[in-house]
Length: 64
Image 1 (spheres, rainbow, N blue to C red):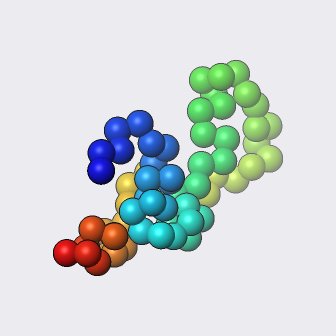
Image 2: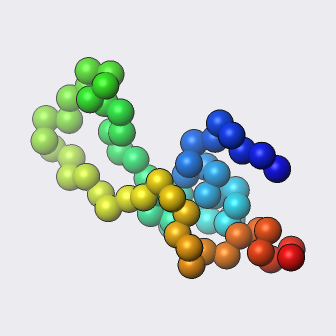
């Protein structure tokens, strides 16, 4: 399967069977600066990643 245009958290969920929150791949307010949105400093940015953690087991690894 080739996933060229998927949102990274969705891709991680498909490959691992876990939700993006379980993978710490959530993006609250991502891209608002470019679109003119304003968070007013009320949201604290979470520690998130756009890369799948290396310790996660993927479907491909399970099926060998």
